[in-house]
Length: 608
Image (cartoon, rainbow, N blue to C red; front, side):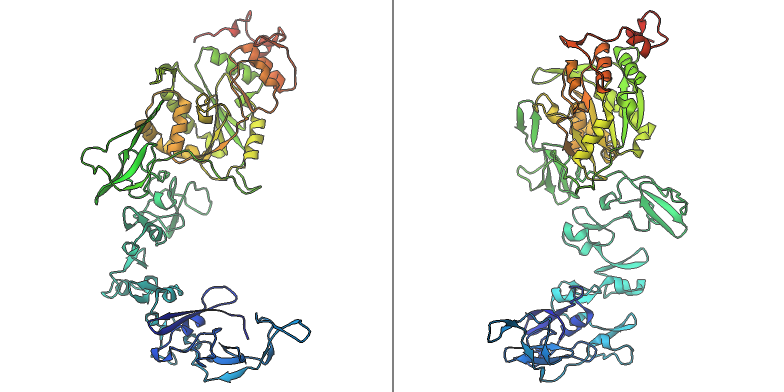
């Protein structure tokens, strides 16, 4: 006797049972056939179920099912039975010595054998019409025979439609059948296939499971294609269905698909349409938030205005002293239904051991030409230190920044516009896309790339994930909540989001204050997770911190002598530091950095 797991369900006085395949743990075709019985067979049971009382089995198998008795305590339906013990029998008896033994099957037949299941008939002429139908060149059970949604859903080719089990839309091979009066209310013809209409999915969870469906307040057909779908007709990639950052690339005249890049020699790689923006999975201030039920901006909520619009409105205004509750905008209900809140920072979940992101580094530095920053850059370049030791580096020009006074009366550097421009130049240069991480280092910051790689490897960040690195362990109020601008580290995927959405960050978050604060707020708003490297660096003017061999960066090193000493210490040298200065630097260090310099004047900033 086979090993069975049976489930029985009584619905409106009719036994509806499902036989589960012991090989796969999923409903077998034969088992589903056995679940379909007439009202007169209400007492009959499916394979594996106890048939002592009914002595009757439902139709199934190639030759029908028979009720076989093991003993007075158990009998079940099966296609055959061999007298004796069965190794797969879960029941246990005890002999006279107390030893466990398998019970013995008598295999006595109880009642009559049932009829074969529909799948037993291989020809249309032999397929019994009264209980089966010929479909797709095989004899199968009628979907309409199922009186219960659970049993109906056990077969892919059947679908539950309100109160009736019907043939699934995908089983219709022609446009005429798909859109006939019998099926048009639940099926639609799309991409030369019949599919279940997106409007039939009542919730967002079920909507995303539909073919080509997207949720936007209700379930609707997506005009664009998801990765893996043929996009020749749509010529666009769906941001809502994992196509963010992708373009529709042509393989040949018969197929095209969405991808971020195309370099396959067997593809034409012709672009069909424009690249689709990445997806933040949230809506920005004032925008429609029906698709996600979440707002990007902190302090905002996704609220229902009326049956036509749900948008992101400000509930709290954040400032240096906390938050102030804001009234609803004019024309909105005083207490609207809230679908969700605003984005908050969150920690990214580490990858499984050995499965983390790589550690290749693209680094860049921006400096003001003719200023002390250019001299600091030249010192590092002469020793192939800092960004010049990364896998790839770039240099960019900056310009002088102003300052901002906050509501707390504190004054900080206001350089957001400067660095927005610099980040645009980084994107135009295009070198970052070949590397796992992008690092921005200030001229007065000495980066140690190899140590940073060790730090990143230890954090085991998940692959292909938008991530930024919190780089210090200072008090949140002075360490910008773990993210200071001297050395900023972002994954490639985080910057892909940034380049798509920084205008929204600037518009809704403002451009007042420091670049590091802006970048962190923007990353949090876009839903980028963080990892923490509290030991990356600690701001300290004393160059003696360069003796700490565990740090991956040192800042601020604004004095040229201190920077040169720190470089030499990192490379294994030793120096004497007194009162925050390096005092034993070789007198000829300048000529090594600037060999063509006359009278040491290169140490002074020279405007060009």
